Length: 125
View (cartoon, helix red, strand yellow):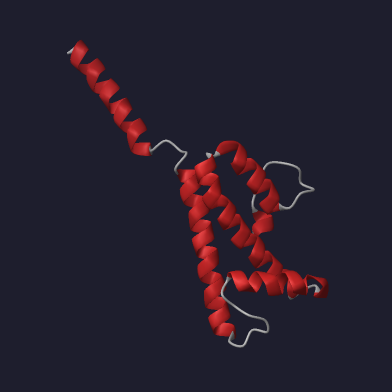
């Protein structure tokens, strides 16, 4: 899923590395503290996923499982899935919130435009 993110930067770097670099150039240090945590969570998910495909990723996956409150070997797959899913949803939510916080609120732009139209209309009327 993360490979599908369209993030500017050097395509030789992984998507999450490009995202980290891009966001660090556009967000405040305060926002980046939360973003770093979210990106670490997503990187840990990648390690767990890669272990299912590549044996040499098993050590990183075992370490990453701890960040989700899980141990290796996984004894309850349903519980493991719920834990990983909850962490991913939280991480993606944090990224969305921090990025959205940098955008102007749509209502503010609209209100400003309405005030301008009202002001212009009252002068001409």
